[in-house]
Image (cartoon, rainbow, N blue to C red; front, side):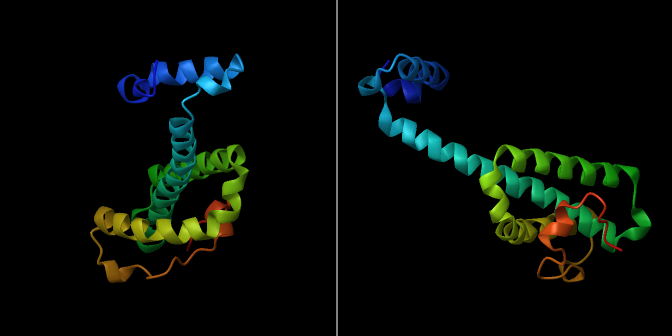
Amino acid sequence: MTSNGHDQDFHAWTHEQADLLRAGQFTALDVEHLIEELESMGARERRELTSRLKVLLAHLLKWQFQGHRRSPSWEATIKEQRLSLEDLLDDNPSLRPTLPEQVTRAYRLARLLAVRETNLAESTFPDICPYAPEQVTDPDFYPA
């Protein structure tokens, strides 16, 4: 399969590249596309981190700003996102030092998600994330 295989049958291409690596046939590798895919895999992990943080932060905002509507469902979502986040960071420890930056990035989206899910005005929620990264990941932290 040629480098066209990358575009025509990605699944088959990945298996072919793995077989070539196992066989030590490095000159036959589709190096250009392998590099692209490796970089894409790293970006995908960062996007997953941002996505999980967005959902978690939105639920923390809802918890704080709609205290009268707190539910077991919200608590379960917060717990689920924290556990998934911890798994992601355990699997990708190089992402852990980026957590403060990722919290900041995800908060912009979380704030909008909280607006949509609560029907509260955007101005209800702080412009800057009110939670430290350590609080976001702390399984015992629930904002008052």
